[in-house]
Image (cartoon, rainbow, N blue to C red; front, side, top):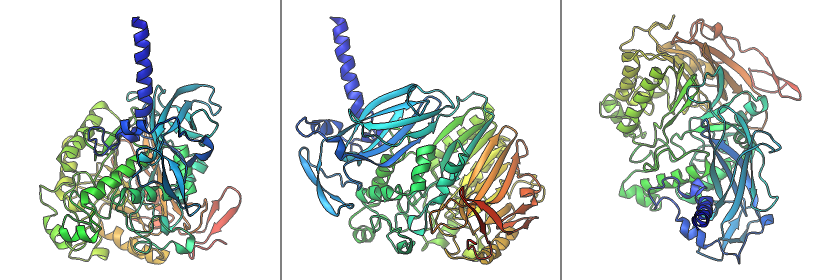
Length: 626
């Protein structure tokens, strides 16, 4: 009798698990029901009289994986009746009309949930299955599925696939990789670093090139995965067939869902998600331009702003964006009691501690909103100002010290915005030479970070940055306190690598010439003490190859992003030797292909770019394919 009761309980638990296994039903926060989905209401719609016909369902946006741990990884897909996303105002039972942008007609969509199965294996034929399960999805979560695959082995490549339950309707096969155990000895790890992909400005070719080369283990994305603007507000995509959808400024949950879905139709972004485990974090444009705790450059908690923006408050807009982001991105909910927390860390063996910050959304003090630049300049040194709030700050400093204490070789900090001081008077004018929307606008927060490193003698620090749409490489130093020598690099405690955008334009203009770009870089490098290299011309990405002996940074520039292609140019390489805490001299071996390098030269010679099928010669003078 006891055995029978146990069997019944186990079956009930398994049935319940299949509903709750889709993490999106409880994201972004399980402990705040108003932000999640009432699963018991979804269960009521699972009536036998209206089952889904599997032939009416499609895996519309491929597959993705992310936030790898040694024994688990997040898997993602979307399976639905139409390509477009849903408004999530469905009735409790029956069918509802849903507009299909493919057919330009309304179609009847069942409100019943969709059952999907997943399996994970060490081989593409799925003979050695490591984990499997089932989960439900529905229009409530935009038909997205996010599950945690468990029982995996550390630092191991796996393949995974979804299918509609009891059918042969399958998703593409994805590939992912777990991280090593915290104390495992790891000889090398390779990362691809991205930021700032803007749909109307060009194709996301940068995402696809590491896939074609199979050159990295994981992808780190530092934010601006999407942009919230309407067509014409920032970028004109008509000429290349890249009009963002919906074609308006984003405010509602439907808006953010559809914009992410639109971006995920780019073939190279799909390929990257399918082949690599991602570790992403948001910047500002996942919500709005220049966000902070209480608003953004275009939306603030004022009556006028509320009326002008259709009755959407700052908090409503932010939570719409956050919910869509958690639905669509292969990311874990870090803290179920803190629905805005995205900051987290990853211990990659004894080689790397990767610390991913949120310097935009979490608890950021007021930033430069364009009309208040003088005010932000005045308060930029205020001790009360924080990029991330006191809770995240204390966590960050503890992460740095505990990483050094455990003996990880490298501390890698994923920050959205540039940390090093840049004299950008050429942009902002002599009266305000700093970018107050970056770390320089929060000088006390920056000083507390540097004090943690210097006071505790924590070295081997690699800071990452995106946001600026340009490439920057600097020695990491406390200019006011350290006896820093830009020639030798002494007085530095690490290096900052900041990357260009996937497609977002150069901050000095989308159609800037290489000569004009280099005129700016010459000024920036000569006027900024710790800046060793800067390139403004190329869109692209960079890879970091880690060993215990050194870090090698490889920067790649894309000749053009207005067509889909697989061209790239290696524009600069840099090395940081373990224990040196500075860029190896001569920096970049004294030669780069583009931009300006301090105490070195720029070649700007014709390079051969191997497209995989043909050889193309790219002229750097006019960027025309010859």
